[in-house]
Length: 230
Image (cartoon, rainbow, N blue to C red; front, side, top):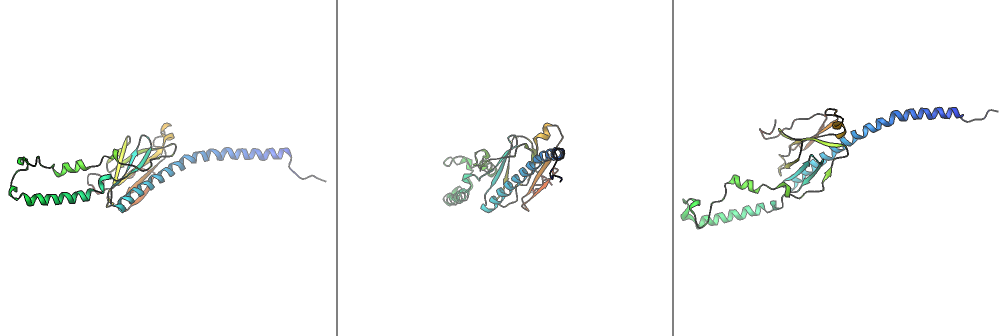
């Protein structure tokens, strides 16, 4: 009677076949891991952009995103602390101006520089706006996020301005018409091997349609500013 089972040679043959299959499959999986990290990093950046713009429109305040291209980090910047008081300050200044106008009708034609009692005139509107511009370094930010391992910023582009190093701040207006920009992501390992651009993913944000597009090549940035892009 013949005994059932596998011989030693048959078992060794099966193990050899499995080993060959593993040698073919495992390297392919390793090559796909950086690809998935790159795609995942792009989706996280896109989600942050959508959140910042949504908060700006909902709360009618200027949110921003600060990209640190050297460190591979980014975070949402909250509106300036004094932004909530801007409307009240403007109303108070308007009321004070009406009162001064009523009390000083006799000095309607006087040069403010000659008004010794009240001191020098206020700065021109343009200068006042520059003084009111918030310092982004002093703005409070939400939790800083880092790109996945081996993922780097290629550049951040606003209109015709491209940034490859340092920090870049992109602001989102309260009415939702500002903040158009493109973020390029690539793999550090590709750059170190000198493989040209290597694999890249580009995240393009359009504030007017509130849409995010992903591309493998650098897209154009369209803005409402005639000098900022087409």
